[in-house]
Image 1 (cartoon, rainbow, N blue to C red):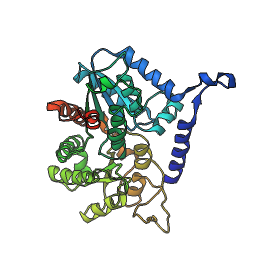
Image 2: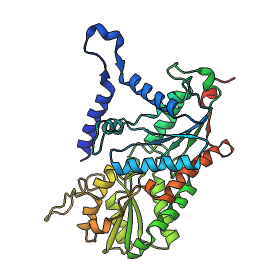
Image 3: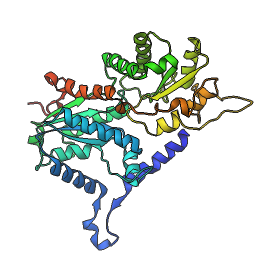
Image 4: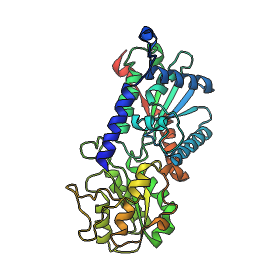
Length: 373
């Protein structure tokens, strides 16, 4: 499953990087326009048409190609506009793969999303030039995508990496960064409280298992994988119940197999298992890796565990079902929702915007660090 996804991702990425929108007439080579220029113009036109204030918020998500996810993103934008009426609010995808697939109409009608760089450049356009920009990450933990947003997109923009922006403007604009959902230890406790409120009745009826993404080995840039462990600890501590567990699809030693081990160690060897995605939206991971029907179960051999201790090509639903628990579509009804669909959790992300703005806590100063006065 992972190999096929990786190959598809590589093909899609190469297509996105190499394709250009141009005439087939060699005489018009000087009129050729790259996709980059087409996208930049589209985003700049959108910002100019929608600009109502002198401050902007850019929500940055990894991306998705599911209508359920789009609805969650759209509702988040609306709620953000409501709570920050003095800001123009926009949404960006950081994943080139998701941007390309969304434009191609995978799963749903085609829809255009754009990378953060296009939005930031549009914000700096001479016809726009917001005096304040807030970039809010919609990631759950600090990982590779968050690192790219902070250390590539924003830093390149602030440093005028390509030399095509107004340097005087960049020296004055205030840029803030809102951190992911579980960036700090206290964020974990706040999330645990919100999740318990949402799932308390189910935890009394069986096990509630959350499936996060996790940083794979070698990519745990901010040491953020520990947040999953801390969340499980807080869920059990605050609920005073051993019926809460948190696993991932990519964090070493915290796969579904490890979740099962911890469940059984605590005496949870049968009963219902309610699986929830611990991700901002319900996309491929939620619908396939968690609640899908993929199953490598063998009637004679059972499950084969790979070198990392994980069972591949098997969803959480099927794994727990074949491990003696009640985990089927009826049990999971209502569980396949993203964190942005839970109002109390969505609010935590919006609170990070307030935290970034308070006393300039999230203010970034990449420009002056490169150009000391």
